[in-house]
Length: 226
Image (tube, rainbow, N blue to C red; front, side):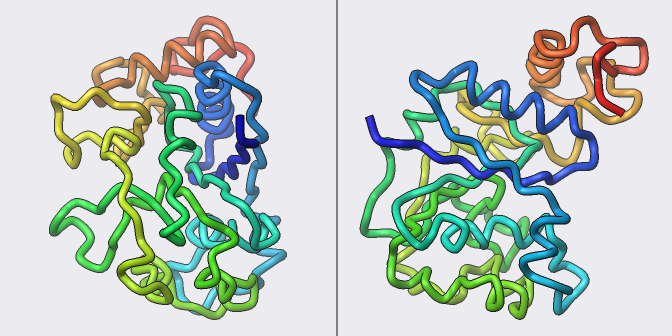
C-alpha cells in the first residue's frame, strides 16, 4: 500500500479540534498514516509577513504542501476543523496523476472566486505546475489568487466526491459524509455542549469523549489542554 502523508493545518484556536481530527483519521485508517501538524508560527517563519490581511498563516499553510513535501509524490492537506468518518486510504486511492491538485468543488455562489473547497486537498507535489509554489512565492501572492489556484490551468485541477468535504448548509443533506467540515458552527466552541449546535456535532463530541473522557458542562473534556 502506498505511503500516505497528511499535513494538518491548525485552522482553529482550540487544540482539542486538532486532537479530534487526528484521532478520527487514525481510528478509521486501514494502515499506518504519517501526519504532520502545521502550526501557524512555523508557517509564518517560512513565509514571513503576508501581503494582505486574508493571507494569514492558517490560510497559506495549505499552499505550502508541495514545497514541504520536497516537490515529490502526493500528500493530503486537511484542516483541523474536520472529522473523518471513513478510511483516509479510500481518499488516497482517488489520486490522479493528470492533476496538480484535487479537491471538492466549491459551492456555486458562496465564494465566487473559489474553485475548490480548501479544507481538504490532495496535492500532486511532483506536478511541474506546482514547482512555482515556493515559500517565497506563497508569501508574496494574494490570498484570493491562491484560493483561485490561479497558477494552474483549469485542466490541472481535479474534482473529488463531495462526501469528502461535507459541510452543513452547503452539501447535500442526504449525502453520507466521509469527512465533515465544521463551519461556521463549531462543536468545540464555548457553550457547544448542546449536541444540536450543528449537524453531526454529536459525532465530534463522541470522538472527544474517547480522547478526553466525559465532557464537562462547558463542553470541555476533563483532560483537555489549556
